[in-house]
Length: 284
Image 1: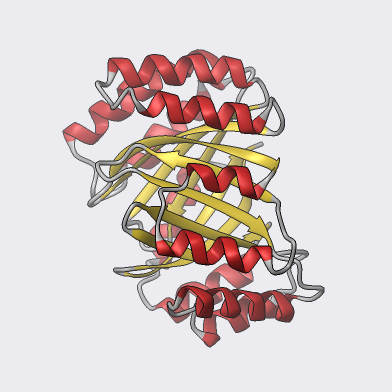
Image 2: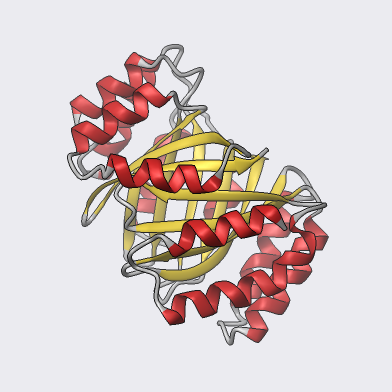
């Protein structure tokens, strides 16, 4: 219960919260709350500039959360055809790894969805990604390296439904992984992350990097990198370079979460609206 109080207190401090968004959050919490303190772990992802926030639950018990998600989709009046896609996701996951359910809120965002975190066949997860030229190109890119492992895949039930996935890059050094990111962007004919940002990531010498993609039926929506256990020093440097950091707001938000959260990932990616950086937490 304490974690939920901290969660709602942190959300109340965000400038974009409206009555409608708070109502959706309460509805989502009403479905998930019975399990938050026991069989599941609470997750949070917050943009540096506080333009959006994502809260979720995670469990190794897929059946437990799958039932709650199906009930929520029906109660909330969401597209029930998406439950068929979710069922395919469950089949791909084959009870391996962890199932995550999330709700995302922001200035122009209000949606919910699901994800699996573990080790899965990339060729299978890509079948849940809407067909597009970008999907075909990235599939070809991975095939040339005989790489067929996704570490994350999922789907959002936004107004324009999209799928997302992540893979662990296979470079032997952070610099090599940055080069692989640049090569992926070239294959997709899009801009990679700027050199200044990549330099900060490489300088932090992470143990590994993950490549992240978000795609809809129109093609690529977002592409970037995920860095495990990001250091506070790296986050501060990135925030200053991005220029829209809101460092004071970030500090206040993290403070409202208390000391019971650990930084799990930094995700930095390019959207059509620009570059977005997010810190992802997990309840300890």
